[in-house]
Every structure is written in structure tokens, then in C-alpha cells.
Length: 108
Image 1 (spheres, helix red, strand yellow):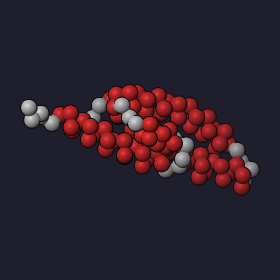
Image 2 (tube, rainbow, N blue to C red; image 1 turned 180 degrees about the vertical axis):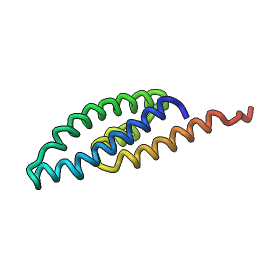
Image 3 (cartoon, rainbow, N blue to C red; image 1 turned 180 degrees about the horizontal axis):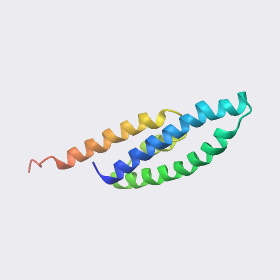
């Protein structure tokens, strides 16, 4: 597996987990218990890591020549809870399939 894919996968998991913590724990605590502590800590961290995630996804997309649909899915994955994990698996399959195709011997 190439370095760009590995970096993307790590960032997808980190951003996905941070978003789940923010949406499922932080926001309910902020509104139900009037306790904005989790949101004030996790929110900025997620925002920064989302930018790092987009950079790693852009690097992978440049290497793999992703379509607009694939890039849109990647962008949305950092904004919609649980979608990061689904998109990460989809992108990993695409990249692995592309690598397998390239390593197959030619019929010529």
C-alpha cells in the first residue's frame, strides 16, 4: 500500500472519530447540560485535523486521479458522522484495485 493511501486512511479514521465525539457527545452536552467544554476543545481540533485530512486526500487524489464524485465524497466524509469510515473503505478498494491492475502483466 502506498504512503499517500496510508496517510489518507489514518486521517480519515482520526477525523471520523473526532466528528463522532463532537456530534454525539459534545453537542448534546452543550445544549442539554449547558456544558460547552467538549465542543470548545474537540471542535477546533476537528477543524484543524479536517484541513490536514483534506490535504492528505488531495495528495492521494493527485496520485490516483480521482473523479469529481470521489472528491466530493471525500470532502463530505469529514463533515457527516460515520461517513468517513464508509468512504475510506470505498477509496481504499478503488486504490487497491488500481494498483492491482497496474501490477498485472501485460498481454502484449
